[in-house]
Image (cartoon, rainbow, N blue to C red; front, side, top):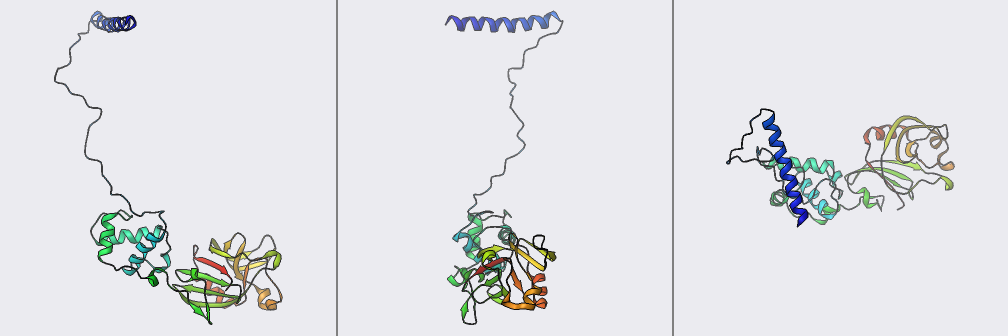
Length: 263
């Protein structure tokens, strides 16, 4: 209690000293009007309140595929981008839909956007959600080749098929790496392309190269054209038809799928 009294006395002395100093300097101290109100900042308007996102850029899963399937029905999204992932193309399609309905172009799906989308589309069928894999020469291609754009590469039949939305557009013979330099299997994407590539590691020409896994690429091979299956690559997918791979190189885009599998 004593300490509190001392602090109040000291505070009073400080304030009193400040007033005395003002009077001593000839300045007149004036009291503030009793009705003056202060605020920390000026309020110039209301901050926008955005609706909650149900699915947005970066979302993934079965529900996203259903959203994409409905956008495909409206021809706002190409089938190749129906892939369970809410990315740039899905976001663009959502904004187009929102603009067509006169609602805020948020670029993500909120409850209102979803309600409007459901009204003008039907529940996607199983075939719309998961188109069946195309059958070529009595064999089903890998299911991952059924949608979008894919270089569908079958090690069993030694064929490369360029597939767009489940339709085979081109087919060509290919060969793969030897046992110690095997061509990797799995799902990849085209990372980059090089029309007149030369391997720094093996000092060999790799024209029309489309790289999909590290140093492994689909490319033309003059050795494959000359010796056929008597040779092997160092891990790349060799093509021996120069005319076809020239066309393929121009068609394939960075980001397109590359599926290497065994049927």
